Image 1 (cartoon, rainbow, N blue to C red):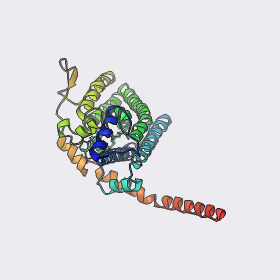
Image 2: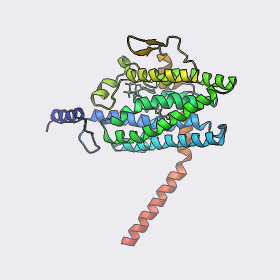
Image 3: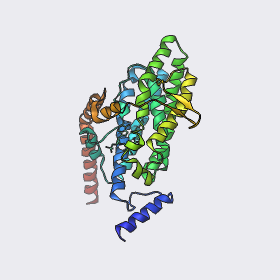
Image 4: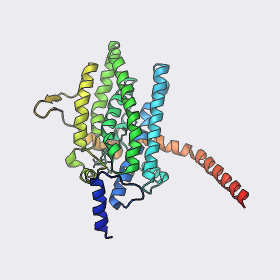
Amino acid sequence: MTNEQQESLFQQKIDNELRIEPKDWMPEQYRKTLVRQISQHAHSEIVGMLPEGNWITRAPSLRRKAVLLAKVQDEAGHGLYLYSAAETLGISRDQMLDQLHDGTAKYSSIFNYPTLTWADMGAIGWLVDGAAIMNQVPLCRCSYGPYSRAMIRVCKEESFHQRQGYEIMLTLANGTAIQKKMAQDALNRFWWPAIMMFGPNDDASPNSIQSMKWKIKRFSNDDLRQKFIDVTVEQANILGLTIPDKDLKWNEERGHYDFGTINWDEFWNVVKGNGPCNKERLAARKNAWDNGAWVRDAATAHSEKLAAKKAAMTA
Ligand code: FAQ
């Protein structure tokens, strides 16, 4: 079969909503796109533990602490499913981590912002996990089988994360004047970075057209951003908080909220490594990797011992 015939069969399968599995033929660019997206997604989950991990020891009650701890552990689990899904495409976990540590792989821009107060735990759950769900529910129908299946559990857990964040915001917004002010301040700082999470506008998104043809992405960056804004404005109204965008206005004709201009210079600056916490986040991950060397060495030595024992017994 020629390459063109293989490609045409591959596209037919996708058009017919069949999943592509690891041993199926796939274009090299499809494989590369998935490795890029899934590994960056995995890195985001792992780096994304840092801003919230920062508050586990300072949670205001035992209940809040237990919930936050569980949430942060869930994010670690998401990272691990996603690294496993990417490994089915022929890249090793070590290679992916090298790419994170040397800066060749990206992770979500949002995790380069600092968490200054407890209210930021509410804003992250509500807005960051909320944006993540909006982007990730369609990934449950991604054309690549292992990624789509991993996303089902991830999305169920993200939905609990979003609610726990919203509940924190609800409590603060109905609390004392100082608590309400904290919640508003967290919303002010996280709103714009959260809507940047969806990526550049469609006309500046080099990967979207091909990824949508391959049904890796089901909706464009701008469509998902708009959906997120439309549902979140209503949630902010219930909280009695104000979204920091003076141009936010319901547009009857479009059936959507209009919103102000996103500061793309800020977005690209963060993506390129110059956000408020990029250096700190990467240093924390590199340290964790270096400090874990003895665990990896011990596990390797243990498995070598077991293999030697087994070999001696069967000899
Ligand atoms: N940050 O052509 P596009 C979470 C890059 S997980 C940094 O539109 P694409 C859970 C993009 O990689 C959050 N870089 O790219 C949680 C590309 O560069 P490249 C992560 C970004 O892939 C919550 C370039 O810009 N979610 O939050 C960003 O078609 C709380 C051009 O962009 C996922 O990864 C950004 N925001 O669309 C955890 C979901 N946006 O790679 C802890 C899966 C774009 O060519 C606590 N990923 N770039 O060098 C996706 O859906 C897609 O990859 C997009 C980007 C939509 C993120």
